[in-house]
Amino acid sequence: MKIISFATQKGGSGKSTLTLVLAAALAVDYKLKVAVLDCDYQQSIVKTRVQIDEESLQLLKESNPDATYPFDIFSIDLNGIFDFVDNPENDYDLVFIDVPGRADGDDVFNALTACDAVIVPLVADYLDRASTAEFMHILQTIKTEADKAEIPFEYFGISTKRSNNKEEQEMDDYVDALGLARFKSSLSYRAAYKRASTLYSLTTPAYLRYVGGDKNVSEEIHAVCNELIERMELPIKSVTE
Image 1 (cartoon, rainbow, N blue to C red):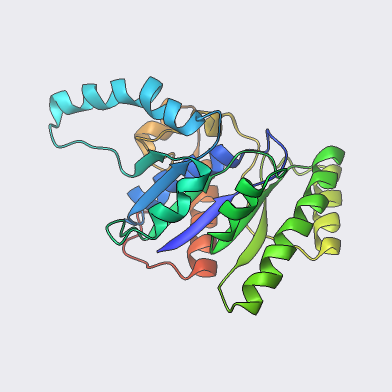
Image 2: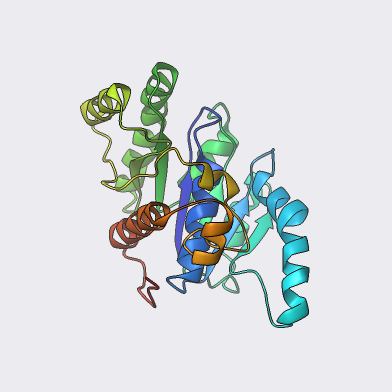
C-alpha cells in the first residue's frame, strides 16, 4: 500500500480536485484498488459522491445492476488515519488522503507523517509562492525525521490550473530555487476538471464529452498518472488508452 496526500497550507489550490481526478483514472484505467480518506473539514469529496454521484449510480444500476463506484471513499478524522492504514483488512494499492488546507496544528503534521509522499499543488500567484515556501519547511522537517528512522517519505510539486503565462515560468523558477522536485506533467486550467466525479473518470470518452472536455484532458491525466506510477513504484495492472 502506498499512501499519498495532496496538501498545502492554502485553500483553493486544487488538492481535492487532483485527488478526485487521479483516483478515478487510476481505478478505472489502471485497475488499481484505490481508497480516498476525506479528512478535510469541508468534506467536498464525500459531498460529491453523496449529493451528485449517488443519483447517477442509481440510474446506472437500472441498466446494469452490478454497477458500482470505481474506488472507495471514507470520511475519517485526522486522528484516525493511522488506524486505517495499519488495518490489514484495508489492502489497497493506493490510498489518497485529503487533508485540510492548513498547517497550523499537530493533527495535520501527524497526518502527513503517515504518507509515503506528499504532493504540493502549485498555483502561480504571489500568495501561493509564499505559502509554498512556508509549507516546504514543514515537509523538510518530516523528511529529515523520516530519513533518520529509515522510513520512506518524498515530496513533490505539481502544477495545477496551468495557463502557460509569465507567472507560470516565475513559479517554476521559484520552486526550483526552493529545491522542490516537480512533476514534469501538469493539469491545465480547464473547465472539465471542475466536473471531476467519484463515479466516472474524466478519461472516459462518453463522460469527457458530457463535461465538455477534449482529448487534451485525457492526455494530461494519463501523463500525470504515468508519472505518479513511476515515481511511487505503483503496480501496473492495466492501461486504457
